[in-house]
Structure formats: C-alpha cells, structure tokens
Image (cartoon, rainbow, N blue to C red; front, side, top):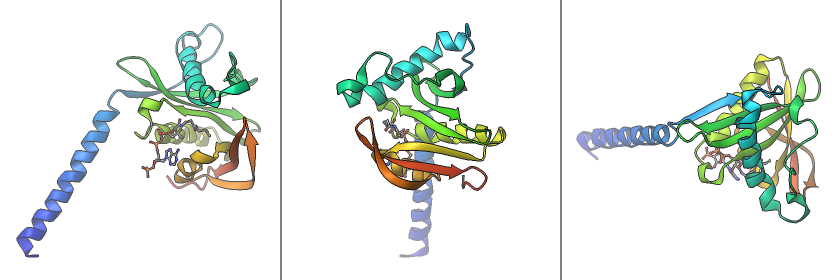
Length: 188
Ligand SMILES: CC(C)(COP(=O)(O)OP(=O)(O)OC[C@H]1O[C@@H](n2cnc3c(N)ncnc32)[C@H](O)[C@@H]1OP(=O)(O)O)[C@@H](O)C(=O)NCCC(=O)NCCS
C-alpha cells in the first residue's frame, strides 16, 4: 500500500468512527436520568414511579409467566427504603429503563430490578444506569454493591466490573449468579 492510500484508509476509519459516535448520540439524544424522590405525596411517586413499575412488570415479570405475574408481583417489601433511578425519554416522557438499590448495611447493599425497555435494549442505557447508580453510591460512602444476576445478564454486569461469587442458584425459576463489585476499586 502506498502512503496516499494508507493516509486515505486512516481518514476513512476516523470518519467511520465519527459517524458511529454521532449515531450513538442521536440514538440517545432525548435520554435523561432521574433519581426519584418517593416521599409520600411527591410528584415523582405519582407520575414517574407508576411508569417505572409498569416497565418493571413488562420487562422483568411478564416474561416469567406462571405464578410470577400476578398484580403487583414486581413490588418488593423494601420498595420505599430503596433508591430508584430511571432513564426516560425527554420528548415522550416514557420510562425506558430503571435500576434500584436497597441499602443493607451502612456500606453495602443490593442492586435489583435492572430493566431496559425491549425497544431500547443494546443502546447503552443499562450501562449508563448502573454507572450513574454506582457513582452515587460511591459519593454516599458505600463500599460494596451486590446483586442477583439472571444467568443471561452475567456478561452485562461483568463488563461493568462485577464479579461472580458463590454457587449458581434459582430464583423465580430462572438460573442466577451472585455478583458483587468493590466500589473503591472498580474500573470505570
Ligand atoms: C440486561 C439489560 C439490563 C442490559 O441493558 P442494555 O441497555 O440492553 O445494555 P447495554 O446496551 O448497556 O449493553 C452493554 C453491554 O452489555 C452487553 N449485554 C447486554 N445485555 C446482554 C445480554 N443479555 N447478554 C450478553 N451481553 C449483554 C452488550 O452487548 C453490551 O456490550 P458491548 O458494549 O460490548 O456491546 C437489558 O437487556 C434488560 O433489561 N434485559 C431484560 C431484563 C433483565 O434480564 N435484567 C437483568 C436482571 S438480573
């Protein structure tokens, strides 16, 4: 390959990278994140929380079928002692993703109800949600975050720095792994 062709190849590669970056930006251009204030009577509890629960039901419960899809099956007893982060579309005000965190000790707790609307999966929303949540946990002094990962989502969490531990187990009839991340030593 001569020098001119080589330079052209580099330029073309840079251009393709730029197009990809612009594509990513356009895809998620209306994407916003919000930690919900779920105090009784709050605006968030009336509007955003209901949409968050609807998404959790659609993405996490409905596909399970059987006994797991009763009304309110997406709710946890520690719902209002947990941190709720949503991703939403600024144009349509639809909730496109969410993740929750329940503090179990002063320095550790569990991430749960990680869900991205089927239409929006694979666009980096799940990654952005977890990263935003973990940043917040670090700023609040948490040292560790654990979770119960559905087997198919283990790779997703590994890419974010979580590691598996303990034996595989079943929850809601789905194979799961225990995972954790050391918040002081995570790679961003
Ligand atoms: C798992 C889930 C939260 C991922 O969210 P997402 O927004 O689609 O993920 P991202 O676009 O941020 O993907 C980040 C990376 O994880 C990978 N990934 C995402 N979902 C994956 C899956 N199910 N299996 C393997 N890899 C996956 C992506 O390929 C991507 O890798 P890349 O950066 O090398 O391309 C989402 O697919 C989902 O809601 N699934 C159904 C509900 C669920 O299983 N929740 C987890 C319960 S433990």
